[in-house]
Each structure stands twice: as structure tokens, then as C-alpha cells.
Image 1 (cartoon, rainbow, N blue to C red):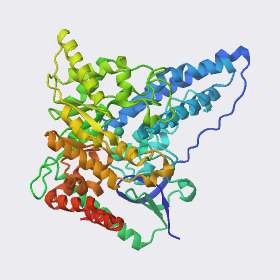
Image 2: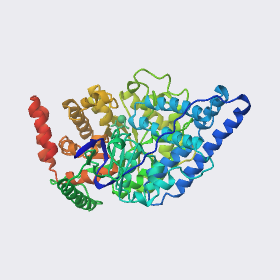
Image 3: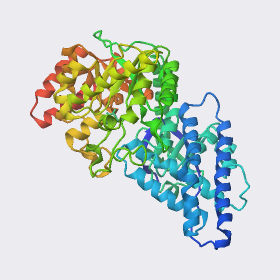
Image 4: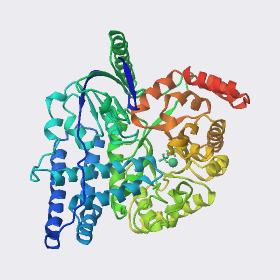
Length: 584
Ligand code: PEP
Ligand code: MG
């Protein structure tokens, strides 16, 4: 009987093929007491396990071909770094010694406390990074409980590199970056995982590799048989089972159609994004890791509109110094060969502590607490090295500096003063920088959007962060599943704030871009054009599709439609018009 399973579609595309069920379960960990006399032997057993895990990952790292997306090696490096970190090398050892417990149990206790820290983070990306902890712990646990602890290869090595995976749809509980590397040459058609969200490793890596994927398909391995013919719809997040000829015909047709569309989109690389009525639109990309710049260059984006530098601060007990910041920025500048790079200063804080005491006590409402620019202005020892590095990087290419979470104009004045001081300091050190480094701000708090004219007067550019702007305008926690249905980018209040910000920029004669998820969502492109937006910044994979919509649009017409839309008080008419704008 035909039926369908539902998850979250995280990497578009359709796959038709047979399943391959990866039945790997987490080893059962129990606690037992270690006699005093052999506690040190237990510590050694733990340290050898860590060592072996590191060797396995280094071994896997060597298999990464030079052509693989940067995400992959970055994830493996992250896991290696974690295995070097005191939270893995020291804390479990202390637990073994003080509790006289077995190594697996000590590691489990440490895992539980680390996962809890990640789960409390309000940033969805950082929250998802608890996967890294899980993956690293699982690797070490498997080694510790393995029958042959000297076994160097990944325990899953032979299965994941087997030619039996060719042309198969992999169904697993979860996939680690290492799994993905091992499978990358096996001609896998799609991934389905029971866990994970849009920001999980499987999602990010599948998108980088261009493989359709559905994550969060709970109990998929219970309902799907091994070697069962299925269809994976990575756009809708559906897995279809019990296929008949009609369904197969329909999806084969969709596959062909998609390939044709992708070929057409590829032709747009390097072509300008000009609307039917002649407006030129800037298309920029968002990046998280320096390696992501390769994807930006590959789609020939106009530059980087948002470089989230928080990732430099992750998985480490200390904060990055000036040279580390500089090295990352120069990496991006070099790859982008002369295109502008907008570096956002650290958007950390509150629950996202960068080390023990920094950022003050964890507050009850982290999204409204000491974060982003508020934290940087309070912790100048952390902020100044980043400012120096951004300025120094500006000597090597067109760099722009962007401040997150602006709320009060006083914050702008403080930052500008710090920039002036930093310039003075660098001059005294005889270091080069761009004297006219543009300093812009993110408009993501409603107060800043309402007063955008003030910000536009003192800043060189604005960028609208709709992810946060929507959350603060509608009082909807952007990571709370319970109320996610209320998170509405089309709410008239949100659109009015976007329009207000764009207008403020126009009046002041400075560029305004939008770098929240809305910018890369094809449903909102025309609406944003109609609101007057002429710079978009998004994940590089979505850029060509947005370009196609732009080339098909008429800004003049859309401006009239959107103007009428925002005057509408009739809720039904409003919803109807919004739908029409999205579809036409
Ligand atoms: C935003 O808030 O829209 C944004 C781009 O910043 P982040 O998602 O990093 O908070
Ligand atoms: Mg934000």
C-alpha cells in the first residue's frame, strides 16, 4: 500500500531509488565502579580511546579530495579540535579519578553537561552544534566498548565505503561529517535521517554536495524496509513508499524538469541581476566559515553581504586573537579576488559565553540580554582585537564592517569612537588599513527600524536582519517550536519596518541590504523588490534562483502593488494580494 513519511526537506531535489538502512545504534553505556588500584589504568584506557578517535579522524581527513566543499573539512577539523579540548581530555579524566567510574560513564556524564549547554543557546545554528558533541562522543564510546580496541579504522568504514551504497538512498538515525566523506564517492542518491533540523550537519553537507535530503523523519528505519524502492522529495520533505507506475512517471518527469531548470540557472552565473524595467540588483552571499567563500565565488555573487564571525569563537576555551581574526578574513578576501566582504563583528553573548566569566551572568531572557554589540562594548578586551583585524584586513581588499543588534544611536557613536582609536593605534604601529573603511549596522531590533533615519545619518550602510527583526517585532522566539507557526515574515508590521529602513537609506543616500533568511526565499523576492530593496544577501545555493526571479520582475509594477498592499486594512484582501505577489 502506498504511504508517505514526512520530515524536513533540507536539500532540494528528487531521488528515485532503493533504500540502504544504516542500523547503527549508540552503544548501551552502564556505570560500574573501578577499584582504586586500577583507576589509573582506566584513565589510560580512556586516553588511548581518545587517541584512536583522533587517528581515525585524521585518517578520514586525508581522504577528502581537494574538490570537496569547504564545509566538509571544516567539520572534521572541528571534531579534531574538540578531541584536543580540555572538556574532552581533562574533565572525563577528573571524573574517572574522583568518582572511580568507568571511562564510558565519565564520558557520558561530560556529554550530558555539554549537550545541555548547547541546548540552552538561543542561536539556532549554535544550538544545532550539539550534534558535534554527540558525534565525537559516539566515536569515542564505540572505540571504548569495541571488542578490538586497537582497530584503527572507523568502525563503520567498510560499510560506508562499500560499493553496495551506489545508487542507494541512505536511511540513518543521523549522519556525521565523517560518514558523509566516506560515502561521497559511492554515488549515493539521497539522505534520509531520523534526527536533525535544517541546520544539522546532514542538511548543510547535503546542500553542499547537491544531494536531496530529508531530516527529522522520525522512525524512518522502523517504517522503511532495507532495499525498498522509495522516492525522496527533498523540497517537500517527503519520502514516498509503495510506488506504482503512475507515481514513478510523475517524479521522473519532475526530475527531468529540475535538471533542466538547474542547467538554465547555471547559465545565469556571471550575468547581472537586472529587472525587466532596468533596475540593477546586488546579489551578495552570507558565509559562516572562511571556506564558504569558495561557494560564493562559484555562483559569481557580487560579494559577501554577511560574514558571521561567531564561528571563530566556537569550540575553544579562549577567544581568538588579532592574528587569528586577520588570517580568517584574509582567507576570504583572497578567494573573493576584489569583491566586497562585509565582516560582522561578533554576535555572541548572554548564554553564548565565549569563556568562563565573560558576558556576565546568564540572564533569564538571553535574546533580550547582553549579546552582540552590547557584549562587545562591555568586553573591549575581546572586541578590540577584532576591530584591529578588520581594519588591517581592509588594507588587502574591499572590506566593510557591520555591527549587529543596534538599538540605540549611542552604540553607533561608541563603535565609531573605538574605530577612530583603533586607526590611531594601527598608525602608531605602522600598520596599513583603509582610512575610509565603511562601517554599517544591522537593523534587527524594531526600535532601530523605526528610527532608521537616525542610524542612516551616521552609518555608511544598513543591513536588515529579518531573522531577528521578525522575532522581536512579533515577540516570537525564533527557535521555539511551540510558537513557530506565528513566525510570519509577511506580517504587515514586519513589512512596514523593512520599508521604513529602506526609505531611510534612500533618503540618506546609503545602501540598504537584507541578509536574513527572507532574502534567499523565492516567495519573498518580488515583495522585497516592491518594498524598494536593491541588495539581497543569502546562502550562495539560493542565489541563482533569486536572480532568475529578479530578471523576470518589473520593479515599477511591484512598487505599486506593494504600496497598495500596505494600505489594505482588509485582512483577506491582504492575504490574497501577498499570495499573488509571491506567485506571479
Ligand atoms: C538576522 O537576524 O536576520 C541575521 C542575518 O543575523 P543572525 O541570523 O546571524 O542572527
Ligand atoms: Mg540577527
